[in-house]
Length: 159
Image (cartoon, rainbow, N blue to C red; front, side, top):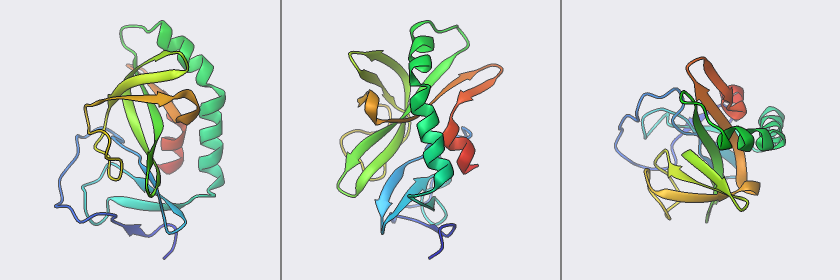
């Protein structure tokens, strides 16, 4: 199967997610590939495989980590039109699943926020539940304002 082939990891009835540009990107390890879950209905067509060694995706994640201190500084002094989110790694038996966490706060090396999307393999929480993500497990971040989005580097690679 080619890296660009589309497949589904679960047999669930098709249902639509809220219409946010990318509600979720989840990464699972499957057959040696990273599986990225995009904002599409569950079922056939909901998952896109991306080679785990994708250099653009790895560079995007490294850039997000290198700018994480700036994100944390902005998080400490938000403006009224800013909305913050982080993409955190959540451990599953199949590998990490990367899920967006909205409304994060940061203290003692950890982010606390609300799971912004329904997980596929991660069973410890559901969409809307409070979660904690260690700083080292942040794969990406974004700040949405009325003027656009800052960060979200992995989303830009996958568009």
